[in-house]
Amino acid sequence: MHYQYAIVAVFMFFALAEARHSKLFKKQHEVKDDGIVELLGTLLLFIFTQPVVLFTAAAAASLLVPQYEGALADTSIWLQFLLFLVFDDMMQYWWHRLSHSYIPLYKLHRAHHNAKYMSIRIVYRNNFFYYLCMPSLWLSGVLIYLGLGWVYAFYLVAKLTIIMGAHSEWKWDAALYKIPALNPLMWIIERTISTPSTHSGHHGLRKDDPATNYKGNYGNMLFIWDMMFGTAKITRQYPHSYGVEGMRKAEWAEQLFWPLIKPVKPIKKDK
Image 1 (tube, rainbow, N blue to C red):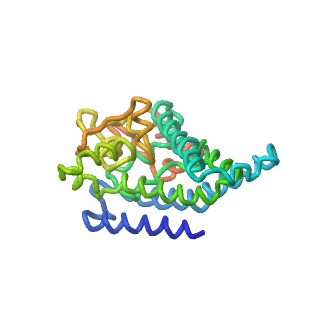
Image 2 (spheres, rainbow, N blue to C red; image 1 turned 90 degrees about the vertical axis):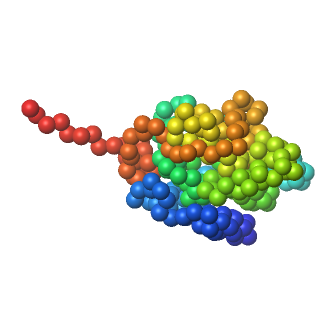
Image 3 (cartoon, helix red, strand yellow; image 1 turned 135 degrees about the horizontal axis):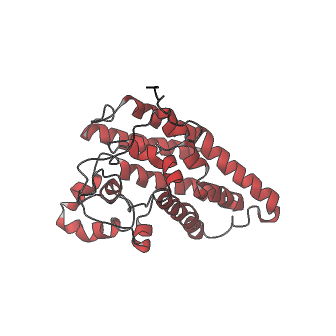
């Protein structure tokens, strides 16, 4: 499908922008396992997890409610887009938020925060089961079954553009904050979509860093959900460091495939 080329084009745009303003590879504090987790995590999602989940969800819907196949195909494009915002993006907000509150789910999400840097490389840096169990992906499959397939393609490009921009080490919003005439526009933008400032705050390492909001700023595409549900923090600043304080080191295989692969417990020597 042509939307896949659009996604690659968006990725390349932010990759080049990031490379121009900093290093795309060999980040400060990067370790060998980082590149492995990011590459395998992204490939697994796009080659296996996302297609399998979307297809399985649609197949299940065809068995349970075959009479509703394509039922929403002729509805307004704006209504279809709104349905994805609610059942995909808002649901992902709650899944993300729950993952920071419930320890077993956090172990599926911790790979994303293991990175001690911001970059488009970490957008899909997550455990295999984090995406496999993500409710929003399954609901998107049902919406596609209901006839929203073409709108999903455009929605996905728009969402990935915002998410990649929010994770990029290139802080595109910083220059716009410095233009007084744009302050009213930026006030609206930073409360509507995720930006480098708001989302990097979610990745901040130190709690005493005024830009950090680790237990908030969960929004993926839209920041509106954080505004609505009381988890927003807007500072127009960027954390000085990234990661999680006190996090135990985990090898790439554990980050990607826990609980199938668990940390090896040290063997206690007899005295």
